[in-house]
Length: 268
Image 1: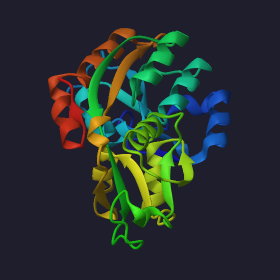
Image 2 (image 1 turned 135 degrees about the vertical axis):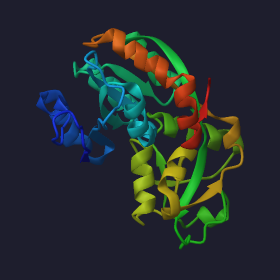
Image 3 (image 1 turned 180 degrees about the vertical axis):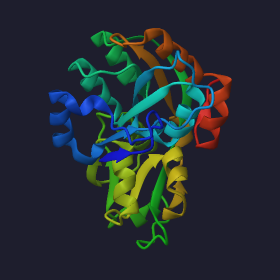
Image 4 (image 1 turned 120 degrees about the vertical axis):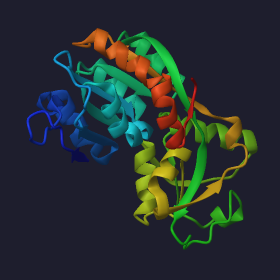
């Protein structure tokens, strides 16, 4: 899904330039809605002549803070939001980017091992809940027998939200059969809000962002399996100093309230 928002750099809508890279064009064709490309640079009162354009490759769950991060940064930010593994693969394939945000340590570790980032830092944690469409048409009551005949969507275990779900299921001995395994938490949420699924397991921050479109059901044991989000400057950043400043902002006090307001728990 390609989304645009006002950039305010020249009074025109600005589309993120990654579309000119063949690798990304192919990836968008293959993954469809699992990638959200956003060029989002709100007017920033503190912008100076030293402001630069930075591309943030953010885990799908972090899309909810794009606008506020752009406003606080003092730079013109462009965002690519997708599953964490997809973002690391983009960097490995040579696509540009300045800052990587992943939804867990395992994916960030793989990025470090691939040499596309270095020195990651934790900035927030998240936890998983179950969501159902508004009105709960399937009558889901919890992680119980009400799921037996329900269409439930989970994330693929190859991505952080899927690994968290699998760990919770294993720890608690739940019997949950998914009708589909999604490549990002945004896709899992989308199946629920569209009515294609009766229930889905998503991060608490995604459930909060969905508002009245969903109802939230707590998953017993989910609090014991939080996922920690990490940020790092990419190895090929065109503006490494400014990217490092952005990482400090992401994990700092100014953004802590933003993370908190959007359903995350900041580490700072």
